[in-house]
Length: 261
Image (cartoon, rainbow, N blue to C red):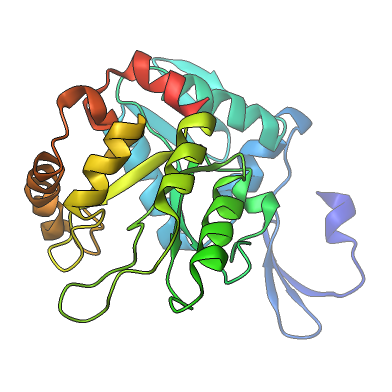
């Protein structure tokens, strides 16, 4: 601490942990044991409300979170690096409620993503979806979809035809070719339960199932009450003759691991 307080731009020292610089900025000082560096860095990263939220989440799980680490049943877990913290996080994810990190990612016109590979690598899976340039040719749309699904983190094709009922027609693609790719590469087709979408359409659901494609039903919720849309997705899947065995939502956690690989 004495070394830090000797910094020539400090003027004045308000307390031993709070100083003011000559440029009028105020700075908090915290000295940490090297073994606690990862914990302290997490504690001092983000806003006050960010830390309050993290502490609340920890408390809900019977944990106590501080700049010293995570206290669990009288045992303090200390984290020297971010990697140490991530290892602990993975161990927690493997007990109790299972948590997966997924994200819907936009497919650009050329089949690449509006997200870097570095960020994609942090996901357990991605739902990849088209949101623009719907009027391409069948060949172009097919290539675009297959290029996107070729990414190792791209597991699900979201609202596959892009239709919005009574507002936008389905995009044109060689769906048999897309379905064949999905079967070969273990990709999933979404049945989007949002009432304005209901996408895949029932005829394509039936075709996909005939090729051996697995489905996943999602609500496409943008607020909590829209989670109730799930029933519409179930009804849509049934219209396409889907059975429980065809829908990965019905899998146990253990069996779902094979889908995520």
